[in-house]
Length: 113
Length: 112
Image (cartoon, rainbow over all chains, first blue to last red; front, side):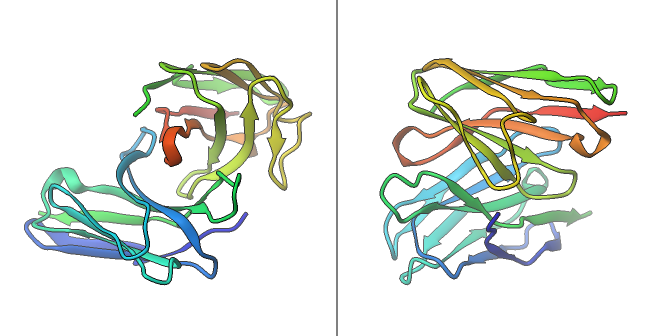
């Protein structure tokens, strides 16, 4: 199925650094969602974005819904060890009744001691 | 939000056998979704399950291989039939109240 282009694929950072990742699509979406998945667990919803241009924060996390509705980014400030994991973006269809999520390819975040 | 539980959390199965995965939600939801996540990969939608109607399958997934039941608004099952090692994956259910989606913890399946 269709997937969103998510970058970078992986990141190796030191604790305390800021992190930025983004997602782009050729299609428009009505909703952008960002998830984090720890090993052996299901994805956990971090931030939901519902309007083009919207900027939303959740603690040290900030995400934006691109004005074109075809992209979104996630920033993590002052990273800590528990931020390690895989981050997925997901877009919810723009067509009425199309509630299917399209997932990004994921960004694996590793913190170097 | 919604609290979702899945059973079993993991299993090791022999090829040719079938496994039924259960998904229970703590509130009534219209739509439930089943995803597959192969090792090191992103999530791929298998099917959408609405109560009272047949599940809608995505391209590449068929009912004979992945039969789904949705007997009420809080419960669904996914069966992985006639398993092969290629079916080794994490299987996740999700629900979508209010234009977002929440996921269960997943069922980790290994087929030998």
